[in-house]
Image 1 (cartoon, rainbow, N blue to C red):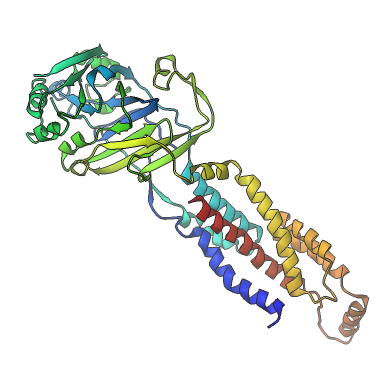
Image 2 (tube, one colour):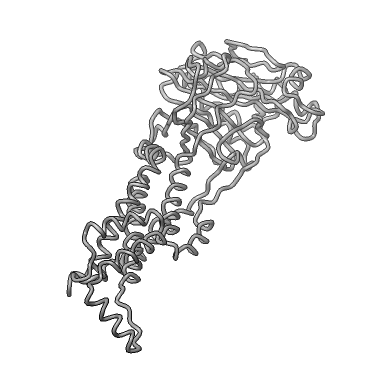
Length: 468
């Protein structure tokens, strides 16, 4: 078998496979999001827990949203609400505050989604440039990862005891305290005394933290009118409030911590958890399940009241932050979450791919156009009528004007390279009534397109393996 035929058979077999590879897996999974483009929260409802976390030199800064009340609007449903969460730190290593309407900057690009989007651009532009496969673009909406917007309503932890109180802050109608307990029963009684109605099994859950150097942060409404005024509530219905009050805690810890065990007290209620980290993080046990990474390109000025949260920085940006999301039955949330500063092995590669995507695409497009023209010329034309190597390489550059530009340029070149003897023979045969064409351009364009798509989509597949 000749070399020419071998090349033809190989390309014919590989092109269909390569065309499908870049799209394999493009529609798997579900993407959860809280806004149209990236996470941004201004109101937390009753079945959602939201926290913002920054970790600096062994100190964890955490802001947890505090939402109270029910759609009934009854005063007793609101004022008897109590929030409680544990912290893995001694009480003297914990500081607390109450803040209002804190939000992390929200203009970040979801790195994983952006990489997938760029891969679709790569394949889409490749197809479009070759004109005739354009109908395949109609399939593109089916190849996009599905997304789902979750809307919740808010969680307030109804838990309420003979305890040691260390620190207390009273602001905006709320009171927050740092306490420790000697046993689960004591903590249970402390919370019950504040009017909260919690199940008996909470005693066992509390006991899991006793004797392990844990402190507890407890928050409740001290002044209902002041609280409602600060959240801008209408008719005491928190679902219509305009502001969110939050508890800000700082504590020493060797690893980043978020309490989940107490959430299991909600039983079969579906809970959505959203945790925002100012840095890339991974689980302490390894892995990145439910973690999404966002690149915040622009720098933003930090409000003076929140510079402490950002480690004293006046500006925040040009960095990667992390979002952890989980939607599950509360009864399945039986373990607290532990994270550490770190990032997936492919994160830096993904960011570089996003930054330099167009440069990389243009370089590959030009390079593979030139190579494809060279190979197609050697497959289609016999030596006697084949354009020079230089002309074939230069012809490939016209693919930058899509296949149409290549065809216009190719027709001019191919006619010039036909020997005079063959041109005269063509004219003579036409005079005798024969229809004949010795222009092999049509075959060249077909082979060029197949080879070009093979290289471009093949490189997309290799990039996808490299990036994921």
